[in-house]
Length: 333
Image (tube, rainbow, N blue to C red):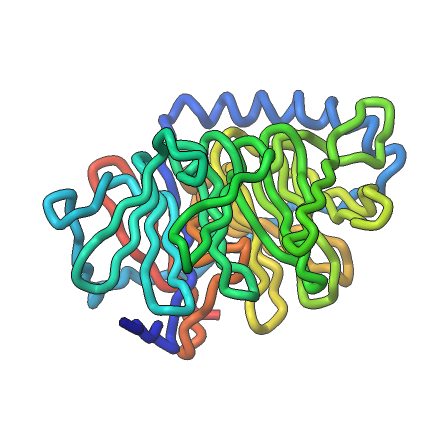
C-alpha cells in the first residue's frame, strides 16, 4: 500500500503553555546562564543578540480539519511523539508504548520483549528515515535500526536518543543527554562528543536537544546552553549562539529561502539567525507582554531535524496552545 504525501506540506511548531510562575524563573535563569557561558565566550565567537523584537502578523487558521485515530482503532497509545512515512507508504508512530505502523487500514504494534531482536525499550522518543529508506528508532534504552525484510531490530549502544539527523556524508547524528554521538551506518562506528569544562571550544553542554546541517554545509548542535556551530572533523565549536533553554524542545529549521529559524524556550520563543551578520533577532506573536515562554517542535523530521516542508503559498503555520484553548495560526512571509 502506498500513500503519497501531499506536495503542500506545512511547517508546524507546537507552542506549549507554561505556568505564569515560569516567567520570573526564566528571567532569573537568564542571569545564571550569562554567568555560566562567560568562559565559553573567551574562546568561541559569540553571536550578537539583537535587543529589538519583531512582532509577527498572524491570522487564525479556520479551515483545518483532522481525523483522529484512537486506541480502539488499534493505536497502542494516544501520546505520539513523532510521525514518519517510509518509502513503502507506511505511517510510523512513536508512542509511549511501542512503535506503531499504519497501512491506511490497520495498525501493527512493535514492542520490547524477551527477543533480543525486538525494540530495546518501550518509550519511543524519536523516529528517522535515512537516505537509504532505513528506519531508525530512538527509545528510552538504546538506538534501534529496523530491518524491513525480517521486521526485526538491531540495537546500537547509544543511550536514550531523543533526535536523529543525517549529514551530506551519510553520517547519523544522535542527540542525547550524555552528549552528541556520530554513527556511520555502513561500518557501525560510533564516536561521542561531549562538554569538557576545561575546553571552552568543546560543546557547550552534554544535554543535546537536536542537530542538523544547513545548506552551506555548516553543522549545528542545539543544547541546553544555546546553539553551537560544530566542526565535525575537530570536534570543536566554531560559533556559539547564547539562548536560554530548559528541559523542553529546542531546535532549528532552514526554510527554502534560506531563512534560519530557531525555536526554543524563551519569553520570545521564535527567532531568526542571520548567518551573514551573526545576528539573532527574536520574534513575538503578541503586542505588549512576551508570548507564552514555551515553544516545542514537531519533526516531519523535524523534523529534523530535519526538514520541515512549507506550503507552496509561502505561509508558515504555527500550532499554539493556551490555557483552556488551542489554535492554529498562519504567518505570511
